[in-house]
Amino acid sequence: MGNVATFDIGRASPFPGELSAGTHYQRTGSGAPLLLIHDLTLDGSIWSPELVARLKLDFDVVALDLYGHGHSTKAAGLCFLDSFLGQIDRLLDHLGYESCTLVGDGCSSILALLYAAKSPERVNHYLATNCPYTRPIFDVDPLPITAAEALRRDAVLKIFNESCRNWFSPGFLESHRQAGEVVRSMLERCDLNVYSQAFGFFSQGALLQAVADGPIAAHGRFLVGKHDPCSDVAQAERLAQAVGGTVEVVESYHLNAFEHADLLAERIRALHQG
Picture 1 (cartoon, rainbow, N blue to C red):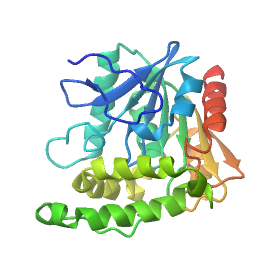
Picture 2 (picture 1 turned 90 degrees about the horizontal axis):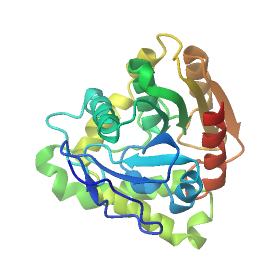
Picture 3 (picture 1 turned 120 degrees about the vertical axis):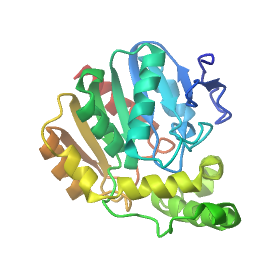
């Protein structure tokens, strides 16, 4: 196993840490264990330096790259949910975490819920941010392996343009161009085949039904921007009712860590304090 990685505040990549299982992650701070799971097509760089600087005062903060994203390797075979769930298990074992607070963003908010339901002894609290629709948000057809590289540039540009319209408040990127460049670099690192496979699984209503089988033991909250075109407030409310969590709807667009570092840090801290 590789050495423990550390955040380099102000620099998004590369990640210096690697597990033998192929998971790259960043780690900083001290305190209660906190695991951050990025949305699909992104990686651990999405958790902005401003957010991390606030969280590391109270938490042992770890942000991983899911398989096929960032600097993690691609999982063997198709990227089923079990690949991601097993990846979380192995990382927690490697870190020596018996349990943690878990934050999942976008499609990975569903992953966080599934993990909390599957492994209740390992999740003390969970925060599901930007709960997605059950159908694909981006009109991007799955890319066959033989055509993936040929189509990669057009696909990345298409996803990037759509993402920036949906993830940032109007006018934000005009004065914060670096945030857009960070997003573009993450999309360029993402394995688009893994993305198309995983997005199909995450967008199936059956996954939401699996989560909604009953209450989740961990204390949980759903955080949704009222004007976020990627999120579904009604779905977040249904899920929260099914799993015993609570919902907070914020008068905002997509709750990304570049625009909303203070808000996210405060909500994560409040969730942990119970």
